[in-house]
Figure 1 (cartoon, one colour):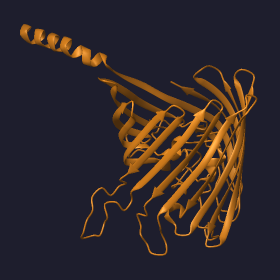
Figure 2: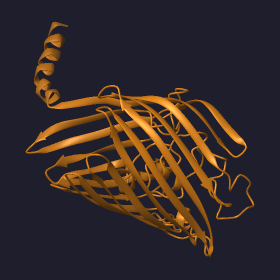
Figure 3: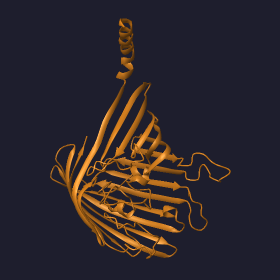
Figure 4: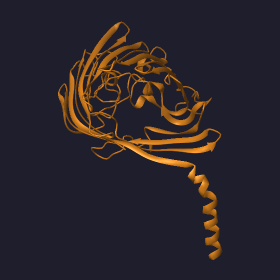
Length: 371
């Protein structure tokens, strides 16, 4: 017994330097608000999770491998603070799950990761469920009864998180570059069934210049059509150009993006633009104003949605922010976008499904704490 204890003690001493070179951080966001809203005949009142930022808990770690090389990993899950439920019960880490190597060349990583369309945002209320850009792109951000997939993947929501991917992220002075390739869900092909291993692959590229008060960037996403139905589905392509400038008295931000064959629907094209300002109030407050429009066009028929946001954020400390915000989104017939879901997000500009062409609004008063 004594020999075993000595052996264990020696093993612990030998391995101690290795442990000293690595570290793991637990981090997260707890965001909750009282909210009231409606969409047509549907209304909502209650506690709402993740209005300003999605509630989450994560584990991030690094290990120094020497010669400027590090091993890195991130495991992150989102949850609804109003119920305590995880956002996606089928995924242990729904937001991010990757491991990789980092050095002077940048970072190369493997797993479930953000596409450039998530990272490169030029929005006065970025990542909020009352952001016009997020609403108009159809992004389900964990808001009120959010359902379905978004039409666009260049947005700050779940569609910009890609499984089975290899990604590169590098910063060189004022330039930031990001690239990703996702192998989708069909990693193996089958000659009998005709399943192609790369039938649902996706790739994205992003480049940004940031220097002092100015920031400009561009993003491109390509999603291979997984359905391959002649005349009904096609590959989806998206791009975005955006920027922001801090004038001191205010910050101006905006972007313009297009999508071809949105949601793989052949001929469904989208034009979306949004602009906003952030105005400092005192040492701890900010007023956020934003407006955006989106046009969904299918074979010559089009419908528009317009979205307006007014919000105020106040930093109570470095990690705690109180906020109040309001959004109103107006829809033409055929569209049903908004901070409160109608049960329909878009329907190829037809009036067959009810719940389109109605207004949606939401007011929220809440608090966000980061740790």
